[in-house]
Amino acid sequence: MKCPLSAGTKKGMLTSTMSVQENHLYTKRHLVLLFISILVLFSLGCILATVRDLVFSGYTDVKEEIWYKALGDNAETDDEDEEYDLMPYGSAGDETTSTGQTGQDTNSSYGELKPVGFVNYGEFDATVRAYTFFPLGKTGAATPSRASTVSVANDGVGDWPNTSRYISVPMGAYSWCIDWEEGDVDDDGIIDYFHYIQDDPTILDENDSDDLESAEEVAISAPPSSGAVYEGKCKENLVDNNCVELNSEVNVYALYAMEQGNPPDIKVAANTAEQVPPVGIDVSSGGVSTGYGTGMILWQEGDWVEVTTSDTHQALGVQVHGDQTIGWAKALFDGQEIWRGDASTFTIAEGRFGVYIEVRCFPPGTHTLRIEGLGLEGSGGGRSIPVSYFGLRE
Image (cartoon, rainbow, N blue to C red; front, top):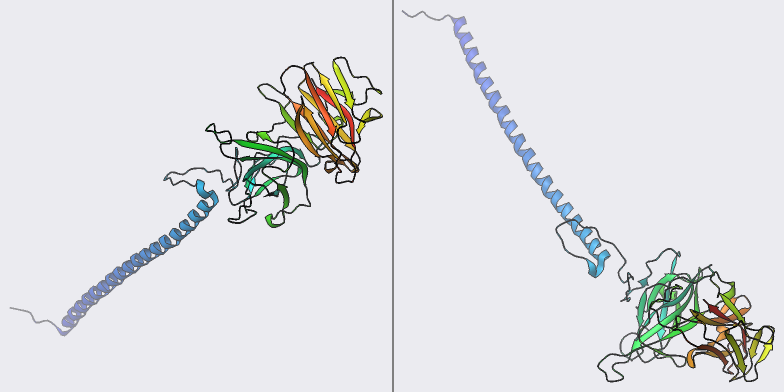
């Protein structure tokens, strides 16, 4: 027999049943919200990752573009990380020819670099590099920059002067070596090269521009209109007193040699009437040259003074020194012309002009160094050549 439920009992059961249903609906609602939240977070994460990849991919492309521009043609592709020397494109390491931009001197020990350009008025394209170098504010020579560039001849084709005719070198005084090729001149199957020394000094200082458009320009010619021309390319000129395995070389300096940090070991007066030369060294003169103190003055074309010795020496030099009213001369070593120029264009100091010409590293034997007047008017309006002394190195 079933017991009828009371009204209160029925009401409690109904309430309990409704609470269970509500709790179930509440739980389902939270689960749905939780699932939707997870989907939203996952979708947001995917979106952020995509944006990150796009941003950093573009950044990497920009970095690579800058990297390869910095490396120029020397850039290499490699999956591994490497260290690169970011040398400016067109700069000189061991020896570089500028191609479109300025060749640079990698030796920064002499301070700020200045650009200098070369305009070639000759027949052949020419390579130019420094031959002698006196750092700004220094009295002694230093090893010149190894930077070089090509100055093209005006053949009527393309731009002239060419835009790659510049090099950047430390400030100081320079002479330049210019070389060029003329093909197989002697039909021996070998290309023939020639060079000469542009010894009119180029002075680069703080007043020179850093911009190529306003850089100092040097006029050259391959071949030159006058002066000595030598076979072969220019060779590196190292400041070194060691003559082992070296052939004869000629150095031309805008200085008074006895006042420098590395003067000649022996000073021989050009005027033997005033000072007798040491034993083993002979000095003689010709023409109408006359004595002036311990020096000699060459007045006209054909006047000369020379030194001769059979003793062992590493170098023979001759000093021309006077005011700006001096003229043209030439120097001969063992009868061969080694230099010719306007002595008044070489500035030694304020109010002092002249040149020191030195031959080094010749083989043992009897050797003669002569300086001879050409009777030509220099830039200062004079023709005489005052010869102060000869210098010899042991």
